[in-house]
Every structure is written in structure tokens, then in C-alpha cells.
Amino acid sequence: MPHGITWVGPKSLSLEISQWSQNFPGTLVGAGTCGDQRGVPGIMSSLLISNEEREVRRICVMDGEGMSSSDTSTFYLTLHNSVVIPRLGLGTFRSRGEQAKSSVLWALQSHYCLIDTASIYKNEAEIGQALRDSGLERDKVFITSKISPFEHGYDSALLAVGKILERLDCGYLDLCLIHWPGAAKLDVKSEENAVRRTETWQALEDMYKQGKCRAIGVSNYTKHHLEGLLSACTIRPMVNQVELHPYLPQTLLRKYCTENNIVVQAYSPLGCGNLLSDPLVSALAARYNRTPAQILLRWGIQHDVVVLPKSVRKDRIQQNAEIFYFLLSKDDMECLDGLDRNHHFCWSSEEIL
Image 1 (tube, rainbow, N blue to C red):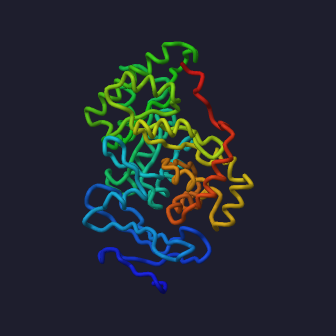
Image 2 (spheres, rainbow, N blue to C red):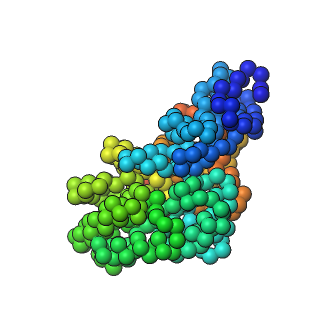
Image 3 (tube, helix red, strand yellow):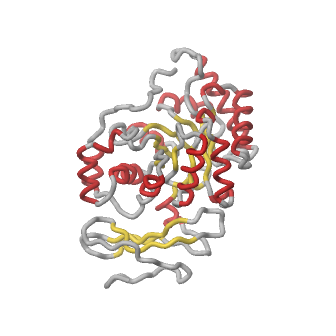
């Protein structure tokens, strides 16, 4: 153990010193892995110290007797129905076949606990097989899928969830989302969009009541869409998944979601790769001795957003998991916030009624 640092965690935790740095804020001093007995996936415990005063700032440990709320908050957020959701997940958009299966296995081996898919991605069968091949128990992995714009409407949505579960063959979904606020083949200005998505939400509420989904939510919803949902729903959405990165920080939407106890998830948190070469991001990566992707993901984590980076490369999947062992300073967070261009690299649902 480095001089001046005293380990105060439980004796049952095996601590290994994996990194020691005098140069960067929020440096990891010690880490080890362990599991618990409550169905919460095993996490990497970390000890963060101040660069300036070299004193222990935060300690996050877990032993066989369970995890406290302060321990959990480093790696997880809690939805308003008390379901715990990992802060980091693997996105699988456009991953197909063996590529999808391999990337999920690599992610699970790298301690990812959340896998994000969708009906329209057409990779759920491969993801389900990867989960079984991993040897992990079902309750150790958080699985998200989504009802596509082609499956809007009460009956269609019920059928869609059934088919999702059949393809994944995983018993239940941890989270099911409405993928898009508009229905396929409808004009964006058609009022029927609101009718269809309301019916779809009613189907999700019933799936939730039946235990088919541990949590339900939406994706690509604007404040307008959320207001309509909140005024009509019986069960409030737990999650809103949207494109989010420093060029599109969704500040007002995040504020609205926070006020309504809706957790925000970020897809394309790297801006579809476009932000990796941003001069500020590159400079911060050099300063913190991190990859540009790690800087961008850490920015999302410190904004209490669940980040869902997509990759099919083993090395990048592993690197993207190493975002809990350092902290971005307040000034650097503000600099990244200043990159806001309100720019979508994917698509915007603003025009959908």
C-alpha cells in the first residue's frame, strides 16, 4: 500500500493496487472485484484520492454482506421504482450476427452489467445466446430492448414484447422502451402519433404489472412528448434514452427529466465517433492520460447520465469500461459543457406531434 494511505474496507475484500499517480485528479489508488448476495451484479470497488491534498476523498467497497447506497451510487443509479440500473452499458446498434455475440461477450468479461438492444436492431437472438454462453446468472445482467415504430399500438406492442422475450430467451426484460415517439408510415404532423404511442405505453404498463419488464421507459422523447405521457399515464416512465454528448448536452431536457424522476440514458455518447477528434477532448485526454472516449464517457457519468457506447472492438470495449477510476475537474466539465452546438449526429424527433 502506498505510504500514507490506510485501507479501511471490509476484510473480506481482496484489494489490489492497480494504479498510482501523482499527476491526475481523482486517481485510482486501489481496486478489487467482488460480488454480493442480493442479485446486484459484482462491481469494481475503487478508492479515489485528492490530487492536491493526497487524502482519501471517497471509498466505495462491497463485501459479501451487501452494498450500501453510497457504494452503489458510484456504479449504479436507482430508478423511481427502486430498480437499480448500471451507469455504463454496451450499445449494439448495427451489430449483427457473430459480431454482436462477440462484442457482448467481451463486454460482459469487462464487467459491463448492461446490454442495450432493440427490436429493430435484429440482434436479440445473438445477444441472448451471448448471455447464456457467458455463464452469468440472469440477474447479474441488465437487459434493455425497445418496441420499434412499426410496433406502435396496444395489441402490436404486446405482441412485440412477447417476440422480444422469445428472441432473447431471457425470461424477462430489465427495461423496455418505446423506441420512437412517432409511428412508422404516419406523417410527423399527424395527431395519430400521440394516440398510437399512448396505446403503446398502456401495453408497457400491463407488461410491467405482469412482471415481464422490471422497468419501462421511452427513447427519443422531447419535453413535449414527456408532458403528454405524464399527463395520461398510470405508471410514470423510469427512463428516457436520447442522443447525448457535449455537442448535444440536452441540458433543458435533462433538467426536466430530473425534476420528474426520469433517468436519462445517452446513446451515441461519443457523437458517433465525431467528438473523438475534437481539440478540447483530445487535449483533456492527454492531460488525464486517458482516451478521448473515456473523457466523453466520464463527462456523461458526472452528469448522472447512463452512457451506452457502442463498439465491436475488444480493446475499445475494455477501455470504455475504465471510466470509474478518475474524475474530471469542475473547470474541465464546464469547458466540455461549452461545446454545446445543439447538433444531432443521429436524428431528431422535435417535429413529431
